[in-house]
View 1 (cartoon, rainbow, N blue to C red):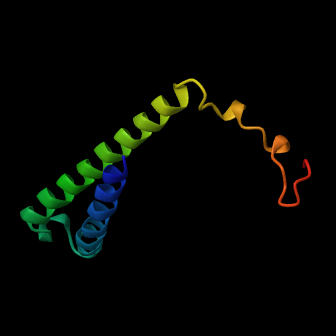
View 2 (cartoon, helix red, strand yellow; view 1 turned 120 degrees about the vertical axis):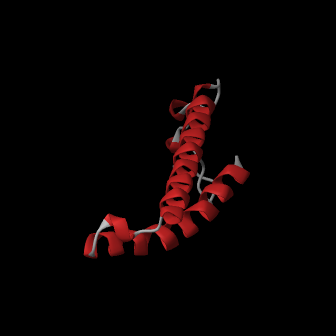
Length: 87
C-alpha cells in the first residue's frame, strides 16, 4: 500500500510539470500546438493516477469492512489523558 502511495506521488509531479504548460499553451493558441508525444504522456500519467487512486480507495474500503477496524469501535471518551484520568 505504501508503495502505491509513493508511486502515485511520483507520477503526480511529472503530470503537473508536463500537463500544466501544455494546457496553458493549448488555451492560449490551440490544442493542435501541443505535440502528440505530450498528449500520450499526459494521458498515460493521468491513467496511472486514476488507477492508483482507485486501488487505494478499494483497499481502504476493504480494510474498513474487516472486523475490528470499524470507525464505530473507536470511542474517544474512554481514552485516558496524560494525567491518567478518564476524559
